Length: 343
Image (cartoon, rainbow, N blue to C red):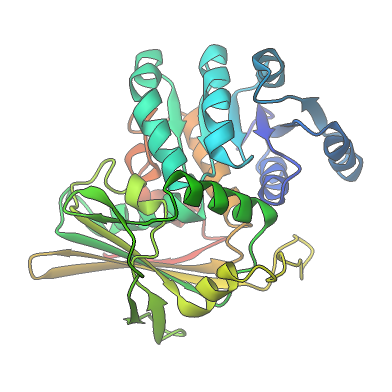
């Protein structure tokens, strides 16, 4: 458990940040809430007894240093990560503490691997980008499905969401990503990212029950195309999204998620189905749960707990599957996820 260690949460008053603060407290950590908006921090503190807050901005390195002072780790929940990731990683490196973020932005995650791999490794610091529903969970499932293997021909990650009510942060981050790639879509094929102008295909995916066969948008590319190939030799990594959820995301009038229980979770459900193929062999791993934003919190906090307790497999910039024992990590989240793994 957290043993009362302080963990900074940058962007703590955001939708996902609030779940992370609550999860840290539940796990015995002491969250230190940070972000640029002093008014929102004050409101969060008023609703959370005993919560320490520290105002900081990514364009003010000194304020970030003060925000991280005396903390054991930092979780960055503030998007768009194209703007926040690098400054907060820099502050974490100065403080000598591990960094975890929940970025779903493909380009921001690529930037983290590209610009900080050598520096983080030299400093002996663990930096884990995309430690979230998108990027982290799919990578853990793919890694668990691979077992002892490190190579495969294909990895397919299908997201079976019954709907998707995006947060404001999701919409902003998506707009930043689209602008960075000039409106083109991405897929990972033949070991590299391809930027394409054509429409993605629509096809059927045979999900496990209770979903069954559902129409999905093929090549609905998420952060898994960064995390999985970062440590596994898989030349074809494809991600898919149920048509209903993709439609919700594309509509500008789809409302933000609404809490329906005492933990603040929405009614959204998900089933993530991962199929890894090599030759004639197929291995499958699945995860079921509720609320893609809420489940990000235990993923990120479990990562921090394992880093601080020395249960990591690598230092530097590493994805979830490279940093942790994937199967053990997933099983540790049994209160939040139901998983089916090979073997």
